[in-house]
Image (cartoon, rainbow, N blue to C red):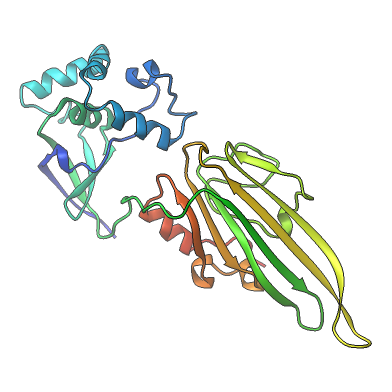
Length: 283
């Protein structure tokens, strides 16, 4: 569906947050020792918010020639480069998020500019609003069983861990979708730290379970522990509990149902939509 588009004057205060995709050309981030390609969105947005009201940091921005030009144009009441390179924002319910022109928007917010001219695309759905934090950093445990027989039985629950940044590549984790901590994540009891302050271990045990006098069944027991430290790295962390069932291998988590135990960081509405559509393994 095509979004409605119009050129309009918007209030800078209605731009919901500082854009974080500023690239290596941002002098302020460089001066503060941050790299947009190594640091997380959470680390960058925290610094931008903390320095916004302090004039000395605006002075750093204005040492950069492009930002100097932006400032001069804003002072004249003009939006820099609008005719040849328009600022573009997405809008939902009176709030705006930067799409193009992120440096100009960042400077406008920091410098107290009241209004700018922008190309506005009106969204029919909220994709960008941040989700609330949930839960506390803690030690979490999960137990589940797969009981072999004529009909396979599934019991208990497993963890699903979604991170914005993954630092240990021994685990096939991705920032694009949750990692199901099932039998495929057997660390044989070894703790693995996949981002600073977040570690887990999973152990699989096979045992015989007596069903009747003459009948036993193979039982695979999956035990997982996750420790999320209070001082973990500033990044996206979403820990969920998911009922153990055959459906988790081919049905989206949003259909099965999940319980959020801990959520921290810049998770947005579009992440929630993606989670509902997440299909880990198709068999």
